[in-house]
Image (cartoon, rainbow, N blue to C red; front, top):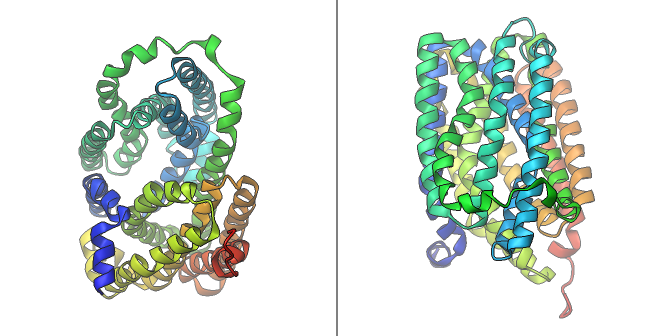
Length: 431
């Protein structure tokens, strides 16, 4: 116990968590209040439809910025004192992002009917897709500005913008849900991320001299080659998983009814809230730490150190959530969502395995093991869909969360196999 307390007090991991606690807390509270408003004013059916739109929006936003964000931030941080390379980085990101965003906006706007049929099945919300298309450029500009501030390590400004943006998004969402119910919720989902650009614009003013370096003549093929691996990995994850979720949700609607899909979406939301904190820790600490490591011994030490210190606490938290699930459902949703309580066990087990797996899988990103990452990620989404569909046919809505557990269990076993020599092999002085 003394070792654990010492670890908590001294480890960078928890220092990082402390720095981001305000942003994380704001996101979780905003998410819970939004879910509560949906539960009260819209109900279970609306929860399912909003889930499909959220997944689609996530994928489209990622495609609009071509998955450049992480590579953009890293490159700016590397060349922030090199005017020529910085200009190439900013120009390449801006113009490629501009063209891809405009292309996605046109595709969404002029194919709104087809997208509506895919997302909303027998419901007609075509105008929401058109609003999404119009709002998309502002989202891309926001991420571009965010990337610049992040690359220049302007963390305090990012923190303030994130908090203000979450509060603004919450107010807009709750207001629109209150006056327009399902229509308001769907419109809020597509415009809230774009509204943040108005705030971010203020934060980027002190970097306005950088904007003069954005020139189409400075677009660089070498920068694009640098971004390409990160972009490919980001796009595979950002597009494959959301679209798989839509396919599973549509299958539930067709086989079991829209209410069952709404219960599953509610369970996913609860999962998102408690995973938000731990995944932010891993993103901010694990990847940079793994990037520094050049031997198996240190890699093994970090992985098992995380397992020994963080996972027991996370596991106890999940056990607590399981036993308090009636209260959790009542606080976040309403009595109408009581059947969600039956979905907690398999979802919690799956999320525990998911975190165990992701910690090791971050090594793919840190060591630029792009091919392995993409193959395993595609395997995950295929298995997730197949196991979910098969188990839904056998066990009803329980099958969806069972599929979540079994797919991440298989993912974990494969990741362990790939890194077996690093984690369990004999370590010599050379490695």
